[in-house]
Length: 351
Image (tube, rainbow, N blue to C red):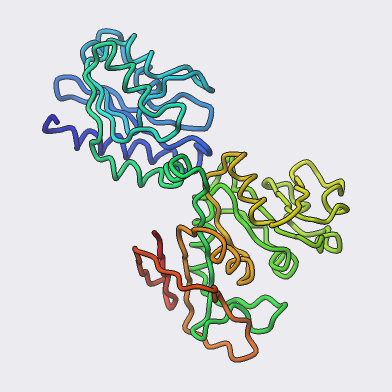
């Protein structure tokens, strides 16, 4: 590894992060082109469907500048035709001498193929520079393609006596304004948000984020019995501000003529299993579960949950309140982080 590889790769990672909230199902990727120790161009994947990071940087330079240069890229260059032509071919045609890659792409269409093509054309390839940092940047993308299932995060807001609301069937503001703002920001890092019909009916949320994106998270409602039929004026069903998916076993709900932003899935059997099956089929890489304790307990009892985020308030709700999470089995997470948000605490546990 060349002495300055890590510093140039860190610059590429900073470039990649500029695409946050805009690349949707594509990973965030950054690139830097260096010659004689000087940075000639930087690039990143700006938007889903647009130029990849390598093409973005290469397009800024002349053939003379590109000749015998070094390309730093945070993720293995693609070697197939998708929404964009293969970056590996462009790199070869540009007569770049050396390519330094942080992370091998876990997507089976790419894995190793881009690296092999570059090497076969005499390009020197270095792999693994700041690999962990690159993987963390696209943690959900990497997990999905390595494990063939979405990253599952559960979020709960509870009082000091482990209550989520003061009276069952009503909404109680448990946490403070800083938490409220944090959750709205946090949602934007996921491709879908999941709630149950009770949360939809009681809270009437919009489940939007505080970050602008052409790809807001899909809002998913689990409504096995079809309770939404009595609440067709809910924001999630009428606002057209983001896609809404409904999973139900009720035929009348499944075939109700909603607007174009609402799509119903008629299910048989376990509705959570059906949900995850559809998410995998649609390549939805991450979900943020904001439903009540019943749904979150079901996730913990049936699946491998990757992350649990708890917002803890110092208030005491009392014995009439509804209890928070209480899974059937002991749950342990290997990494735990704590953060103070005014008078509330954020606990982030993950495996």
